[in-house]
Image (tube, rainbow, N blue to C red; front, side):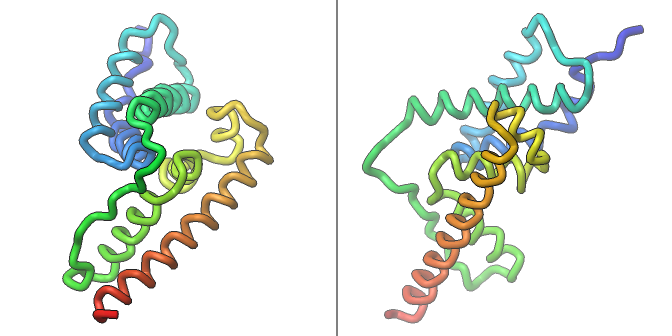
Length: 168
């Protein structure tokens, strides 16, 4: 009996949604994109049977759906809206998570994408390079720049939070 190539899909779903959410910045839109990607995958004529290849293939489908969504909603003059949240009522882990999410929301889509692939989805540099169709060295430089931009965004966000919470 042949193995179902989509057998690993249920286990992949949370990571696909997290990746899509990082790309588009909205959980509901991310879930919609993953549903769209799953429908495309289930209707595909050729499906990779090797589990790592299948995983990369699914992330590529989600990535393409996210890029299409970003193109549809592209706005040149708007910055992502920071959520209105009272940071002082959360514990440190929640504050750290929210801070990173807010920082990610301010990054350029290409920076969010590479961070999502490597730091969130857990792809190796070589896997990300293959998925993005770029050399390994390009991935290495992109992730370095993206992490730098994220740290700068977090640092500037922390300063704004401190200033606003102290009435300055």
